[in-house]
Image (tube, rainbow, N blue to C red; front, side):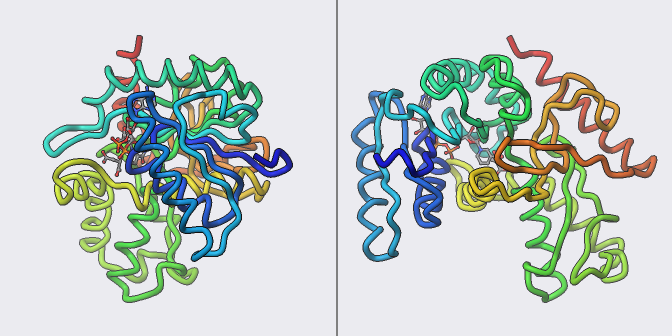
Length: 312
Ligand SMILES: NC(=O)c1ccc[n+]([C@@H]2O[C@H](COP(=O)([O-])OP(=O)(O)OC[C@H]3O[C@@H](n4cnc5c(N)ncnc54)[C@H](O)[C@@H]3O)[C@@H](O)[C@H]2O)c1
Ligand SMILES: O=C(O)C[C@H](O)C(=O)O
């Protein structure tokens, strides 16, 4: 691989990992190393080769390889973790905690060994707790361990709002705070279409319906798919965050960040607005919240803490 180019390693070559590899390669963000377990090495190589063979048609120069050997991830600029199990209909994300916690510990050890200076992006669920696990297992500074939920949850919210208004998704903005679960907090006061506050454009009933659908957005896809969870939008979200870091864009995006007093919370990974750049999370933006919004965020924190507190 050409070492002057950026390198993105993706651990877990399932639905989200392979889709993220495809988007990252197409956007020429860097060369991509797709990693899975030794028993899945051939399918992993197959997915990487298939993506590589789309390059002449789509016109990109990124190299893509599949492997189970962590030496191939050496000196990655960004490592994305999607390894582990996904939920099935009837399960909550929190049901995955025992299995995925073990996976986080083992993959983090390998990531740190070969890329001690990298920035880690965690997708695996329950993602607030899994990001906390990776932070503790890596020994990395907090700004270099980041979880993905808010870009996806906000994208869902923006999709539903644009659909309700018959407007372009590009002109709808929003912010979803809190844990990646049914208690997430879409902030209506900070949401707009073409700069016009949402509350002027939609009835309270319609807004409530959109908030409920956003909160249950993951389960809606799980129920439709029947055997697995969402992967196109989650992968797009991961790659938006990866691009912000690799290109030092200073994007204002929601990330799962380690809080040390921000919003009044300590020792917890939670979805908040952040600035993403070359150093990872470069700052956390503290929005003014009303009493009602703060109460909703408190409830979300309680639910994230319940999972965090059973981590070993
Ligand atoms: N945070 C979010 O917004 C979000 C969104 C979508 C999915 N997810 C989560 O991401 C995870 C992956 O989802 P998916 O749809 O890609 O699942 P998937 O089952 O398609 O892929 C997971 C992959 O991880 C691999 N794996 C398991 N243990 C491993 C290990 N120790 N080392 C390397 N690879 C290992 C599996 O072999 C599999 O290929 C799930 O936990 C899911 O809930 C989170
Ligand atoms: O819902 C899931 O289990 C996967 C993911 O967290 C999602 O929101 O799509």
